[in-house]
Amino acid sequence: MSLKEIKKLVDKSYVNGVLDEKTVFKIASFLKRKDLKDYIKQLQKKEKEITVEIYLSKSPSQKLKEIFSNLYKNKKIVYKIDKKLIAGIKIIKNDIIQNVSIASNLNQIALNIINIT
Amino acid sequence: MIKSDNILEQLEKKLTSVGFDTTTQNIGRIEKNTDGVVTTSGLSKAFIGEQIVFEDSSRGVVLNLDEDTVSVILFSKGEDLKEGDTAKTTGKLLGITASEELLGRVINPLGEPLDGKAKITKGKEMLLERIAAGVVEREPVNTPLKTGIKAIDSMIPIGRGQRELIIGDRGLGKTAIAVDTIINQKFNKNQNQKPVICIYVAIGQKQSSVAQLVSKLEQEEAMDYTIIVAATAPDPAALQYLAPYAGVAIAEYFMEKGNDVLIVYDDLTKHAWAYRQISLVLRRPAGREAYPGDIFYLHSRLLERAVKLNKKYGGGSITALPIIETQAGDISAYIPTNVISITDGQIFLQGDLFNIGIRPAINAGISVSRVGGAAQTAAMKSVSGKMRLDLAQYRELAAFAQFGSELDPATVQQLEKGKRITEIFKQPQYQPLQEAFEIASIWAVTNGYLDDIPVADVEKFEKEYHEYLTTHEKKLTEVLSKGEKLNNDTINMLKKSIENFKKVFSK
Image (cartoon, rainbow over the protein chains, first blue to last red):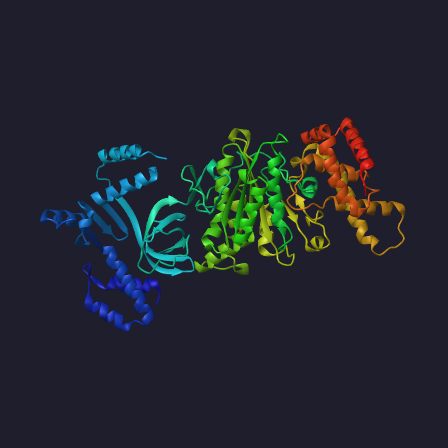
């Protein structure tokens, strides 16, 4: 089965933007081992594309959650706590990381000092 | 040494100006790690030639952008990288820090020192991949680059800004020619010539060979103006692939400052092998001899960066001496023919000449320099023209004379002269000659002053004649060093010197 066909199957596995378990198992039962491996890989990739991970140093307030929901419409938002940020936010969307935190700024200062010396 | 006060001051400045800057990174995850090539998913913002950093701080460069994956060649072995590890883009193309501090150093293609001395931290960042200077910025090659090897300087002269290929089987003295050329550049000061900075790029060679070379250059006081870029046999194919580009990037730094640079690529055959290995692992379509389709472009874009800039752009130059190793003298193989078609001439070394004692084993009949007389001083041009003719006539007669036993006196004389010219062109390794001595030797043999010297004594005669010139004929040496066309006065001085020497020479 070609990659294009696998991707079509992946698109069919989503109903209203959510992964449908029944469809997934039905498709999986018809696939050969190699195609199944490609199908799983593409599903993981698709999940990554529709998921946004938001790291915060403490639990988000309701207001903050609403802001993010409006910002990332049609995306699945996953909130995670990471105290190492100290304060600020880290957003991982697919393969882009945007970091607005004290920890990343301090790291940058440290790197600049190393470059000076 | 940076004082601690300075560091604290810098730190305070940074802290007061700290704001919430957003850092954006593009990441990927390793899917496969095979033979120095890592396949990653993600890295959607990566571009070709971009540096990638991995979780364990190892680095690589992007070479393939596929629909779902990005292929990165590693600069290290990558044994610790496993599936799922993170890779990040840096937003930077591959470059090397170049500065005057590199002179006398041995480094790898990433600029890391291999000689145990301090890391080079300050300098200009030179990109490894760059487009060569355009037509408008160039001027014709018009200044000689003296190799100190009589056979080359007289018959296959090399100019500054030229690309001259050195080609032959293994063990015939290709590297020896390049090393003698580097050593000979120390005489530029004596001859009022612009100094030449030398860069030797070792690709896929034994580490012992590189160590031996460094030791020899130090002994000959040539390391002061030489840089060695080494990607030896145990290094990853990626470093061997990048080594020549790192070398020419450093050369361009010095050239842009108005300097003349000599760069030796030893050797491009191994460079092609490294690129073939990378391309096959990257699953690029294999062509003739399993080389990828862009193998010609690999070398053409490298060698095109050897250039002679006009005065408006600084007047600097890069002279390239690429080396190609053939198998069983086959110069019609794929890589040799590619590089021959790119360069401005070639020096052929032949095994049968080497075996009968003609060293350097240069076949002057099929070697060529497309720059020719424009890369010779007037003095050398005036002596070499007649000598080339004599040698050509000798080669014709030598083949014919094998069959005949009865030869006329003129033919015998021609043959004897040819033998002496061939003998004069023999030269020991690591003993490049200054132009004055080259001219004196060639003038003496072409004007018949060696006809009464037995062939076996020609080497001794020449050596002692040079010593005689150094001690007794300083004025003549100075005149010849200027490189001006030989006038009657100079010719008379030459005649007198050789006649006087012959009186004291003992056979």
